[in-house]
Every structure is written in structure tokens, then in C-alpha cells.
Length: 163
Image (cartoon, rainbow, N blue to C red; front, side, top):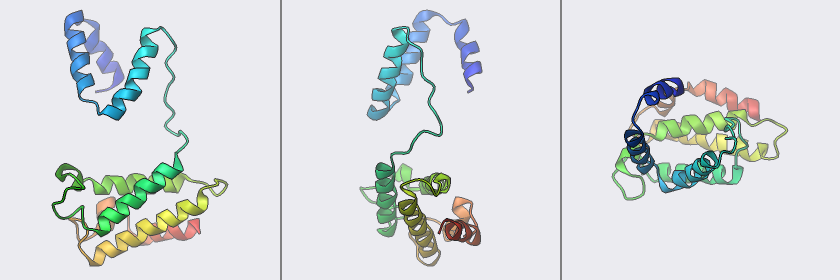
């Protein structure tokens, strides 16, 4: 639902129903999201101007790098293929979206960025992992490149361009 549609839906609703809907929605957030949302709610209730989040916000590269390295380690251990206690069952099929987002984030990093070299190394590691996935089952797909929506030559070209 878009924001405008939500506003129209909420415009004629009773306050008690609105509170109930808000509380039930709030319960669906993870603990980390709740902490971020708590600050936003407090600012709104205090009458402060709400800051819009920037979609191009600065990436915490150290945390991002660790996330990518953890993903690669889990993929090599076949944790996205076989049942295990590390990757929940409902998250195993979502590996392709993780990889797409990793590539998209790494693609945006410019040459002037101080983390550029590390970004290229991560992109290379992802490329090698996808190549490895073409020969060995590490995902539930026999063609990881097709699963992530990239052709192998195109991803290789991106990698070469970054070098």
C-alpha cells in the first residue's frame, strides 16, 4: 500500500481502531527495527520535524563487509542448501535477493571512495562464489547467475571495469 492510500484509509477510522492497528503493526517489527522506530515515534509525538531517510545514505562498510563475508562462508558451507541451525528455512531461498543487493551496493561505490579496493575484493569474492555455484550445489539452483538476474559475462565485465 502506498502512503497516500494509507492516509485515505486512516482518515475516517475511529481512534480506538487506529490505536489497535498501530500497536498490532508495531508488534510485527524486530527488536532492532523497534529501536529505530521508537526514536521516530518519540520525535513525532514531541512535535519535531521528521527527517526523511536518505536512500543513498552512507554505507557502514565494515558491517556490510562482514555481512557479505558471512554470507559467503555460509554459502560455501552449503547452509543455503541443506537444513541447518544457522540459516532459518524461510531465509534459505532468499539468498538471491541478498546477492542482488550486495552487487547493487558494491556497484555504486566509486573510485574515490576509501573503501573502493575492499569493495572490489568483495565483488570478486561474490563472482567467484557464483562461479563455484555453477559447478557445485551450494544453493537450491543449478545456475546462480540466472537466479540473481545477471549473465556471467556481464558480472565479469562489471568486475573487470572495477579493477
